Each structure stands twice: as structure tokens, then as C-alpha cells.
Length: 311
Ligand code: SF4
Image (cartoon, rainbow, N blue to C red; front, side, top):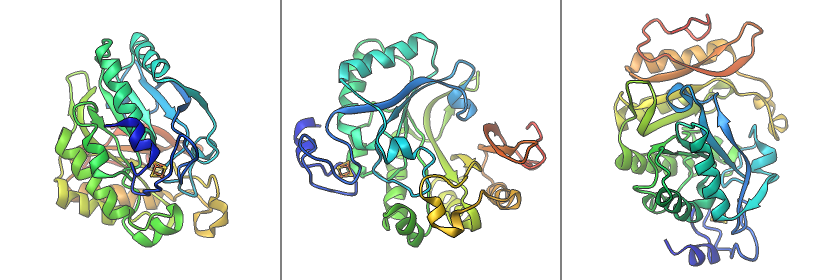
């Protein structure tokens, strides 16, 4: 990947802005310099990712999808964060490894793909041995993802929309459903199904996250059918119930509430009926708020996220 050339005429994601990021910005708002908001051990990811010692999570500023309901809109839309050099990023990765992280979890990395390919190579050269997690929206070009082959160990993408009408309305990306599906195919080709070791920690593979929106707007049930057909039921899934109106969501009346327990249960029932074997789910807490705590609900003929059973 010729990093400067790619950034001088940036077409690294499906937006294909063609801007020179050394001088201006495109849709994502990111310049050529790496910019991060936070780097720390995180314990709220899915159990195979957070494990017992935490996931070494690095949040990148800006985003190439910019959903209107983004819960991190200060980071994604407003670009809160600090620019850092590649050397500083490598040092952060190594420090997170030293602190015991199970992996390096790159959150919203897509618009920095060329810089990150270089940084990951450099970090591995300096004895980074824990897996790299690519935690993205999946609004990514196959050709860009191909450049990450051998560098990324675990892909943790979203699959956000089944219907292009809502992809356009909420993320200004009508082509999201087919672009993201092609991205998932490439991720699966590179890393296969999720591999979890005897301690329950992921070492390689693909896990797809799906955020349930109110009124079935994300089309998660339809997406589950699609993914079962495409990848089979060994595909690891994370069904996220934590939606709440954030960012500009209140400008869209239908997005103005959290999801109902029955909406989440319908999605979970669909995943179970389709036979998915490895499903991570979230629970309603006693005060009727969705907690981002994940549990494994996979072999879950009896899974019931709503009763708070410890599966
Ligand atoms: S990474 Fe940013 S500037 Fe480059 S094509 Fe995508 S949205 Fe445009």
C-alpha cells in the first residue's frame, strides 16, 4: 500500500471522495494524520474479545459512515481526539499488550486503513504478538481490506442495514447492504469462522455485530437469514440491544426511543430458529435499561435475554 499516494487522492473507502487528505478532508473528516480519542483496556466487549484481562481498545476519531444515531458522535462526527504519530500508536499497542490485553481492538479504523497497515506491521516487528481486532462498520472496499490480509486476526464488523432505504436515510449510504456484505465475504475469506481457545478467548476469525433499531428499522431478522445463507450457522454473531437515541436521532421520530424487550426477543428467536451456534446477546437490567454486558446465548434453545438468565 503506497500510503502517501492513497491519501493524496483518497478513495480508500466506498465514498471515494478523491480529496488530498494532506490538505483537506472528505466525507469522514479525517486528515492524513492518525487521530485517536482513547486507548485503554476495555471489559465491556463480547466475552471472547474482553476475556478476563480486557481488550486493548483504541478509538479512532472521525468515521466514514456517520450514522445519525451514533452513540459516539463526539468522536465520529465532531472528531474529538488527538493526532499521534505512527511511532506513538505502535508504542500504545505495545503498552496495552504489556498491561495484559488479550488483543488490540481498533475501533472505527477504516478511514485510516493505509496508515494502520503500516503501523501494525511495525508493531508486529517490535514484538506485538496478541491478535489485532478490526472493529469496523463494514462500509469498506474489498480492495482496501485485501491490504489488511495477514495483519488483522479478528474481524468484528457491524452489519447495520438490510434495507438500502434506511441505509440512505440514516447513514447516507444507499449501497451499504451490498458493500458491507462484500466486505464480510472478504473478511471471512481471510480469517474464517471465529476460533476461541480453551480459555474462551478469540484468536482468529469473524464475528458480526448487529444493532437492533426500533421498529425493525435495521432489518436484523432479514439480515440473519441472509447471513445464514451466505456464511452458515457457525458464523459468530453479536446481537446488540443497547440502542438509545443519540446524536441526531431525535430529528427522526421513529428513532426517538430505545428498543422494546419484545423487539429484541424476536431477533434472538430468529437467530435461534435459524440454528446459529455462537450468539452473544445483551440483557435488560433490573431497571429496564439495556446493559452493554454481553453473555453467550448461543446454544440457547432456552435463551431468554429478557429474564436475565445467566446462560
Ligand atoms: S476515507 Fe474519508 S476521505 Fe477517504 S474516501 Fe473514505 S470518506 Fe472519503
